[in-house]
Image 1 (tube, rainbow, N blue to C red):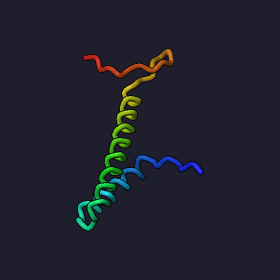
Image 2: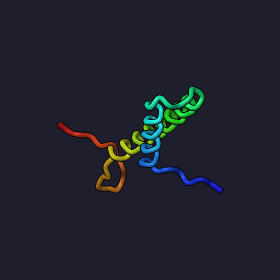
Image 3: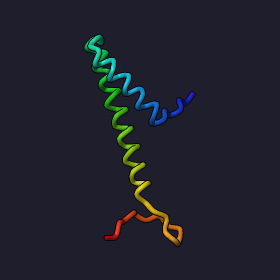
Length: 74
């Protein structure tokens, strides 16, 4: 069975939980390393998602129906 990809918000919540667990200091070294590795993977996925969203937002629909980069004319 294929696992459904988590939403951005779910990933952020998971990242917050991991950070909280690591900050508590009640995690043994091996578990801390695994949690840190997982947290870095989630952070990278979230960063990529934000970058993609920013690229999409910075495009405008022109009068002829094409997408172009948004530019401010001064």
